[in-house]
Image (cartoon, rainbow, N blue to C red):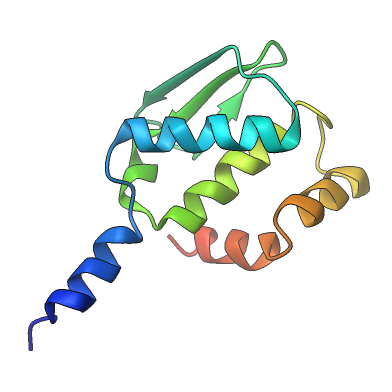
Length: 113
């Protein structure tokens, strides 16, 4: 049974249109979190969804483009919060809860990918 046009539109809108839309989401979250990314790169990564250097160079896995936006946003917020807190301790988790209250659920869904 094929999807109706509305179902297709909903499914399509849940994914990133292109790499520019993903980069625009980074800019949006930079402003919200009040951090600055120096450079955004997209490339294939074997073991990670993303990484960020202490100087603010953000690398995103191109496979994020195939994931639902809410999972990509989790990855973006996770990396940007590392500019505030370098580890995954209590303070990091508090920031994650402030910016993405459902971050733990998103993280679990991402781990299933």
